[in-house]
Length: 308
Image (cartoon, rainbow, N blue to C red; front, side):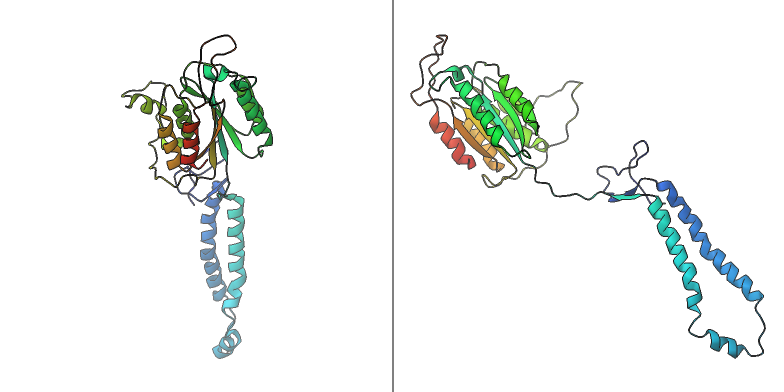
């Protein structure tokens, strides 16, 4: 019987790493091929039995001359019948092959600043609302086949929405921002890279604290070892990009330019939307003293390093 790999109820499939190219949905039918293998022996036995009852001729030469050049032809129909039956049995076993098709998957990660400095009103009505409106306008004009994810950041960063084709989910995440203290721009870039390249095992916590934890929760699933990473030319990875909307002033977390270097090494462009003015503003509408100028030099350098 031809081998098959793996099994689900009623359907057999190849194991993920088995290298199995073709498999059968109903492999039980392949057992009948063993019965077909006996048919040539039966056919030969019938031929010998028929030869015993052959007519006697006065001259054997006459028979040899009549059969010369045609002996093999009488075996052709049984052979074709045997091949046809074999083909029918293989077809009945439902052979299936998995053929990988090229698919250009494109993903864009929106990294949006939700720190308290985004409440400054040097951009009307304020920086945060301007960022939200810009993001929604971008989503409206973006081709539907491109996946979009959302990362928010202040003193820490978190994935508000994994990359998806569902624009409504991304917009809901944009509308549900909750502002916090601190601005970790570098953390947001690193977290976006972790979402875009899960196989590389990028851990934001390792970069924040400088060492890997020695233990893990019993509820955590064991992660596969990260794949080897080879740096590529900045901006060369056409399947993903990061759009950073921020006033750029980092106060905590991973260094912004160090995170930009990580993106550049992976060929990911970081397109920057600076929110605010270089003069800044002295306060928020509720009177909280926040003097926050747009950190234009850092944002420009991030875009330059990554080809954004």
